[in-house]
Each structure stands twice: as C-alpha cells, then as structure tokens.
Amino acid sequence: MHEYPYIHEKGKLPRTLARIDFLSDLNPEALDGILTNSSLVEAFSGETILSEGDEAGEFYFLLKGSVQVSKEGRQIALIDQQGELLGELSALKGETRSASLTAATPCFLLKVDPKFLDELSDTERSAYHLILYRFLTELLTRRLADTSARVAELEKQLGL
Image 1 (tube, rainbow, N blue to C red):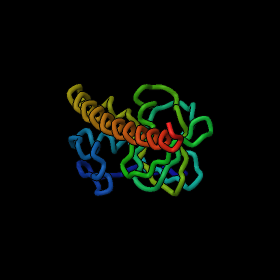
Image 2: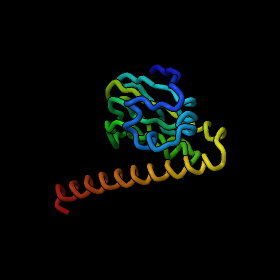
Image 3: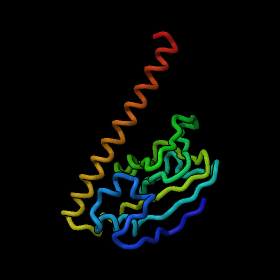
Image 4: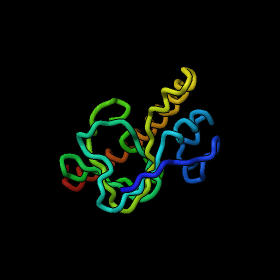
C-alpha cells in the first residue's frame, strides 16, 4: 500500500472529488482544511487498509476500486461505490475499528485526518458537523435499506 500527500489548489475541488456530495457541500475554508490534512492511498488487491481492533483516527472515501469489509475474519460486505465513506463510525466515536477493510481490487482512497477540525472556528466547525451528519444520515439510511433488502431476500429463499 502506498500513501501520498494530497496536494491541491486552494479553493478548488478536482472533478473526482466533486462527485462526493459531502466534499462538494463544504465551504472553501473547510474544504481546504480537509484536503490539507488528507492523503491519497493506493492499495493493491489483497492489501489490508484497516484492521479490526486498531485505534481509529482517520476515515476514507473510496475513489476507485472495491473494498472487502470483514468482521472476525468473515466477509460481511463488498463496497465498490465511488464516494463511499469508510471507517467513519470508529473515527467519529473514538473507538477501535469494528471491522477490517481489504482491497478486493486495486483501489484509490482519500484518507482524511480529522485534526483539521482543530483549525476551524466554532462556526466553521458547526457547519462542518452539520454537513457531515447529514451525509452520514443519508449514507446509513442507504446502508440500512440495502441490508433490509438482503435480509428480506434471504428470508424469502429460506421460506420464512
């Protein structure tokens, strides 16, 4: 796995990142704070990105490829949607990682270190949290709907 500092032009959001609703909704100052404290991660198939039980800090946006999520060594999900947020719950709650992430295919991720929040004013920090929580609500709602659909399909297959 390789990690590169993310170098960006202040106030500009590259096309790839503009497709991520959360980033495109931020004001230029908050966006610069995030990107200044971010790096690009290139992971090859089979490489571990995060390990279950590790201390949390940063979170990731999937830019390209697919990532396998596993818990206690068992695959529980495959994520391949560009812009998907990974590792966010542990990072936000300050808990250890609840699952492992492994590159299922070669992939690129934007790794975000939330220490940029320390540099924001109270107003900017509040605005950032508002956008983040709205984004997380939409993300978790989508994940719950997907999980519910999978459970319903399994129940149908089992004749329950």
